[in-house]
Length: 221
Image (cartoon, rainbow, N blue to C red; front, side, top):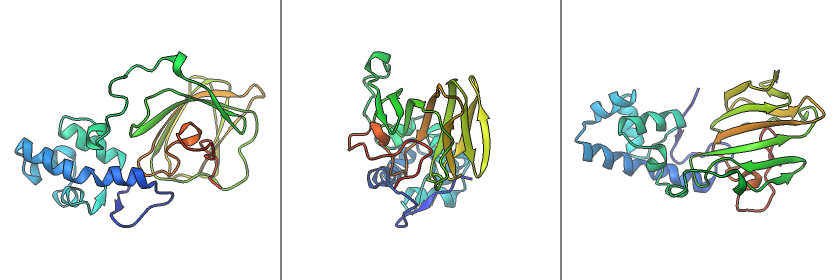
């Protein structure tokens, strides 16, 4: 279940910059609806929301989750990036493999697979061999999607372990406790996409800050 976070009450691991981007959605929603000449009831119906819910979003009393942002973007014939006021990467929609400089943290290797400054982050990740650690699993708002390219991945979701092989994928709510590990000594390589709307780990180890972020599936110290 995807829940909006009430304004003024931070969720777990809330990122200040991401929270500010969400706060900026409210005036954009009002402006889009007024430009379109839509009533609150009509706009809410197009997005599959109640008028009361949309009103709270437009007044900034609620923070939209990713599914709600997607629904609102479709309703207004725009994009989530536009709702968030993001322009980075718009002039470079194609990501060249030669530009994806690998970075390594704790044996995990990351390459960007998407543009920076977006509402989600796409990565190509190489996970080293080893069991998922028996430390607290990661839990944070958002969604995660992965697709295994080579090797086999051990994915632990809410205490249940899944073996994910080449060609297989997984898509789950990040509020579900999760950990990752490679099942084979050769490691596992995967494509990984996650939303960053309210996560303090917006940069992971590929961000602009110091490499203090932990890989997906591992807790922040």
